[in-house]
Image (cartoon, rainbow, N blue to C red; front, side, top):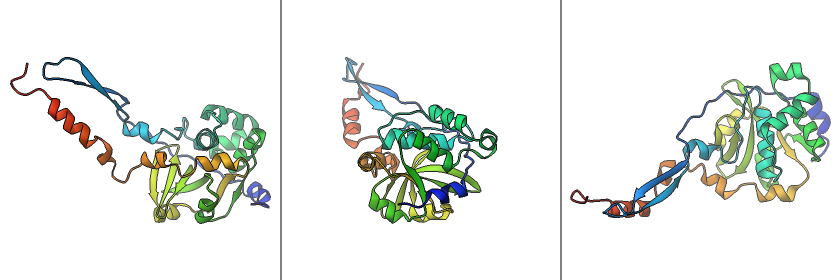
Length: 238
């Protein structure tokens, strides 16, 4: 992977971000009675679907900040480099063309320069997903969602699915054909050093499990439900 810096600098790709409000029940603890006489209780930890979606992707705070949220997520969840969206946003804002950023959002060049200041080497490449899968590293790319250009993180790849970290919508499993249709520029922005760290956090099974094909099936464990029904007070218990 070389010879692409000039290409990246000359093309200065930019993307406006989707505005999205994700609502849902907050996580908490549900308490159940532990016996027919109501003595004691047991609790089950609960995580809402909204919180599952944003467990390993940072939610963008501004209309045009999907770039900074995607980059902060890439570093925090794939390179063990904990950094917040606002920190990334502030640094790229201070060092970037602020008038352009106001109207067009951050560019891949803004990200590249930020990463260089932080000790990373990164570039954009026109390569296929199969090459990314072989390298086992995450990437930032731009997708076209009904006319809106939007930065997302490619967090994993399967034969027919792509695991995306979307700063507006959270984690999502997208069919390969659906992704290909929205992936117009065919450019993958990747970090070229610290590959050993990236390999450990790419195609993470735990992340895939946060986006199950049939999410309702994971809502309640059947064994737990049977136990709950068994211990539930009867109509004549007080």
